[in-house]
Length: 223
Image (cartoon, rainbow, N blue to C red; front, top):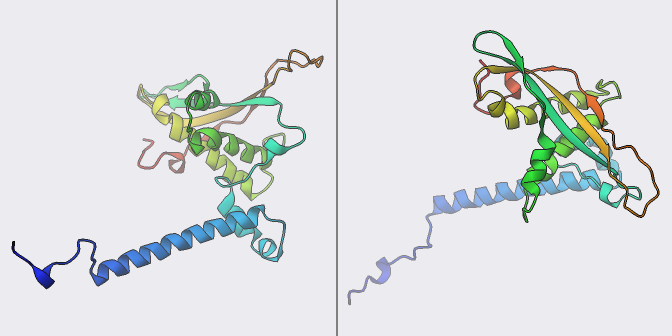
């Protein structure tokens, strides 16, 4: 049997440049994780000197994707079902306009979660938290109450276009405007309860929003 002696090198051996690249990448990942954990910790921790000084920076990082919500543990949990729906105004190829019917995105998320043992974070929280973000930054007349109001509007528009643009334009045309609404219905009381509630849905209808290139999914065009 031929022996290669010292010329044999383990397969796991790496050159010095490769080790440097891996080390730099590992440090970068560790730094990103540390920053994320620090931001979330400062957001949920009691107010302190650092969180007060950097409140704006922390808020910009956390909202809306990483916001924490503890309503599950509230003394009076939410007793309503809220469905977020959207429709679009299309400009067809012959120059005419057409308005689509309402699409219930909440129902779609519910179907995706049903019987799924490992539903994604997007299916469970993206739409719900995005809508709560909008409500918390607008008054009853749907007017923004601060800078976060404009951010929440852009976030809602991007969710709608990301999910529904292909469905709306399947027969041609382009989306010019979208409109969003919520349908709130009370959760029926248990059979043994004497509480009387109305099952009539309550709608909150937002104004029509003009769609811009920034609202489109990455790589898409609105010509």
